[in-house]
Image 1 (tube, one colour):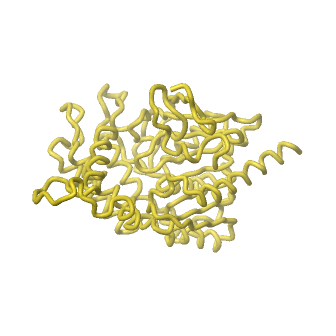
Image 2 (cartoon, one colour):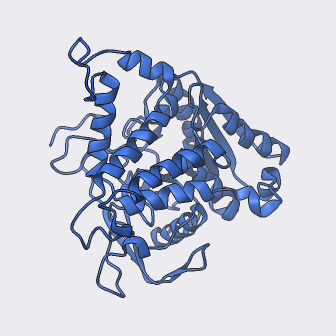
Image 3 (cartoon, helix red, strand yellow):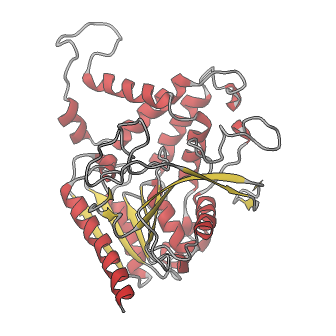
Length: 384
């Protein structure tokens, strides 16, 4: 593919970065060495002050914008990253990575354990959001970035941005949290457990050692994705998109998919089961479950945010019931109680949790205005 849209970053090539320094995890386990795969867009300025870190959600990865050679599908957040977009690559240097434990090139369950020469599989340790942030700080060191202009993320990515502001308060100037929460609700933990049970009870799971058996727990992954996908959509959005439409226009009186929504969910599950690693899915959902930065501060989020130095942008969506606006407002209220600067917006949208990935005009306008303010501040500082 040679002709790219004018507002695209164009053809991009991932980079793999090796880290030899052992990483001690929250669990107490140590990863002796690891790889992180990243993509970058735009140019780093002379004092490395215009860098933006993009943190991905549960099933995300490093390919956030632009196109890979021979692939006509753009990165997962291409609607927000590029020349003239909310995250303007003419003004920012953008770094997007595949988190540790991922399955798109960074060290994880499907990568080779250097100590055994075999895939880690279930032996890869459980990682937390704080572990990811620690590895991302090392990535910043490697790239020569002392302080991010902003750390940006949606959903689980927003949780990473929040953790960044607490763990490394002097290393980011802005924290952008979109469609996230200060910790998972009991209901969300329950959904994650159903997904994990679907995977681990699949006969092809083999206690996580399915690589050695040359199989994939495909049915379990499909079911996990179908359950998850339902929670990412809103009732209004599903009704508007699918209604109760029948594929053939009439009932077939059997147990095959008959409604359009059934077909859609099966398609999403099928596609996911061939593109994502089951052990990684288990790890990512556990990282979600464990996230609770207030736990170390007597369960008081305002206390956890006491020493943060950055400014915040927090966004939620009206029909997001997985991470509802009320959960975003918990973060906002804690920031106000802690005396921090925060901008909050609640976007009217029918798309449920998935809205954070969709270029809803009002969303892009407000998000873009905040990022534009960051860019203007950078350029004004350079002009002095």
